[in-house]
Amino acid sequence: MPTSDAPNVRAAFGEVGNSLAWRRHPVNARPFDSGHRLGGHPVPVQEPVEWEITRGVLGPDAAGQDSRLDDEAAAWVLLAQIDTDAAAGMMWGDAGTVYWLIRPDDLAAGRFEEAVFTWQCC
Image 1 (cartoon, rainbow, N blue to C red):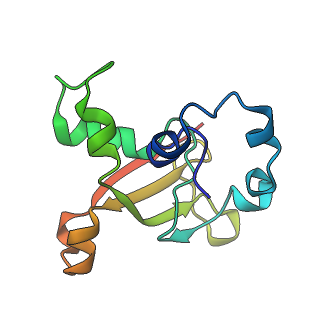
Image 2 (cartoon, helix red, strand yellow; image 1 turned 90 degrees about the vertical axis):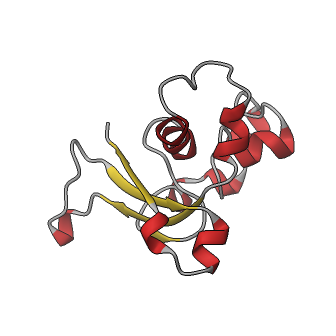
């Protein structure tokens, strides 16, 4: 399940981040919020990962309330997420997570060289 501030959730439901009902919904329980993923929705350590990717793609001029940010952020999907994993001996920064995102058309065409990487840590 995406986080309440993910671009696709905001597009569908508006600003739900401060909604008590959303925060108490079972999909926001801890078992859904951690681990490694192939596809699905990223679990950000900080802000939505799609926004980080978008700022990198659009460049330093895209900031604040730039209308292109939400549109571009919605154009990316999670390819893979690898969480810090003590059992596997993997630590990303300070207990962080690494992410690869890709546009759906590139994924469908097998253009994995078009995937974009970012990472977040506490």
